[in-house]
Amino acid sequence: MTRIIMNGCNGKMGQVISGLVAADAEAEIVAGIDVTDNGHNPYPVFTDINDCDVEADCLIDFSTASAVDKMLDYCVARNLPCVLCTTGLDAGQLGKAEECSKKIALLRSANMSLGVNLLLKLVRDAAGLLAPAGFDMEIVEKHHNLKIDAPSGTALALADAINGELGGGYEYIYDRSSRRESRPRKEIGISAVRGGTIVGDHDTIFAGPDEVITLSHRAYSKAAFGKGAVQAAKFLAKQAAGMYDMSDVING
Image (cartoon, rainbow, N blue to C red; front, side, top):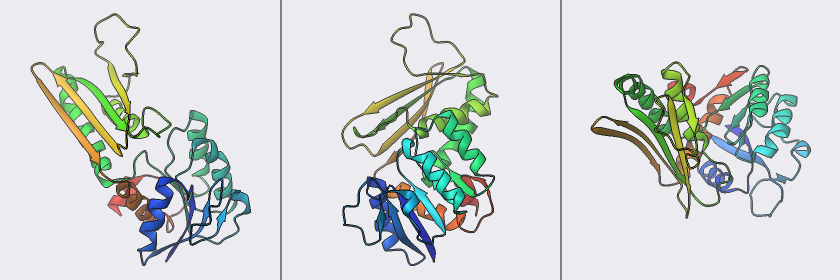
């Protein structure tokens, strides 16, 4: 039985994961952390993470970027593995996560779904073949109107996968409204759409001479991400200190 602390338990993903774990015989949420306790959860909820003294095997974090530093300090102090799912982290926070991974097992992934992690592999393969043949690369992501950060962490992960495959040196362009020039070869355009209740759509477009290839992923439910997070928590609870990602979970 993997005992889990859910950081951001009252958020949409926190509630999805709570429902998934309730039906999972191999996991249990033993405590939640959030800014308020609405009394609707079947486990104790703490409004200050440092007040949480419940024994656990792993923490799943689906909170906000502003809460991540304190959460990381908490996990290090208690030698608690952490599945870090919150996006929109700045360079300092990413560096802190790397430092913390020297002391605890920490899994960070821009997207927890199996499909997206397969997509990352596919775009690397496509970029290696198509970019040298003169194809331009653009990423379009769409999310619901409540999502705070833009572009999404998954869109940036897709851009990083392409850029890494091509040896770096590509510039990420988020807005062309002030530019009056043709498109440079070494750029990756990233566009964000916000509206309605879109769970998460990502299109990676390879536009070449006389043909276009689009690699797409559509999420129809947040459960796709929640299942991956629970699977990651089960995996991480048994690991030594280090930085992990979803490919480690998938490969077992």
